[in-house]
Length: 413
Image (cartoon, rainbow, N blue to C red; front, side, top):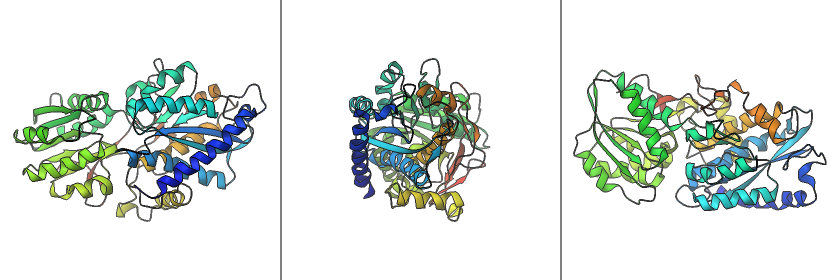
């Protein structure tokens, strides 16, 4: 974890204190009876509950850093001109939930006391689910959050929510389609997290390979998100002789240890990893991923570590903003840094089209974004919030690890 984490938390605490003071003075209403809490004539306040400690602190920290980087640069340039003609700065308050649903719910309640306009960017399906009903009840936007749970993009079930990253089924299906189109015969072993996260990935994958004569699923096991080891499952799956391992796993230390364990027992299949646990530097390098014939994942964002993007204009600006405003001086170890930067661009687009300083107007504007090429997005992907049942980003490209970053995979093998 970068040293900047403590700085982010400290900064957020300072902001929280100053802005909650404004709210007690009535500043949260902006002096306008039609305004929602958390927005004034000069500022808007967003909240992020995400893991800043514990095993998922690495990606969790990124969900704050990328957002802070984007709006730090925007604020330095003068702020955002909203649809009502007023220019506002965007303030970010972050809260550590340590990937604990109870802490996440408590954080949401604290946000309401602190005068937050909307909740955004935070990582985790169980943690976002923990306060979803409360957000609906209080009509508070919980949007562009980092979960692939389809529930958050179902407008009837979740009227005040919207996911940002592709739903789990989309990611699993993308890899399944690539594998089904390959010429060779493949035996597939599956290990998935025993919750909606894992089930979604497997569902999408199986639907994509249905009817493919060249693919046989030879083993399928699950693990619990609280497990500290999956050695027994790996040993059992290795015995199947599978040449492809579909590993729907969200816990960073378990992915690393799985990559290492499979090598120790002499099992070297091609791997599929979800986008949120496929970091080149934080996961693949310590896991010794180059020992395998191929590590595949899916993506919709440019990878700063990849030599192909070293001079990319978006990447250069992003890294500079991340260091200066996100208090994150290192090369991003997780894609969530890039994703939350894109969230910032998506939110700015919605702000520009808000014609009233309230949550209803914001949700209307947010659900009307189509074809937005946010910074860092790969060619062929875009933000589209207009499709019910789909998150802001629903298109992904399958990529293959090249030892440093990723290249788009035109075919399997």
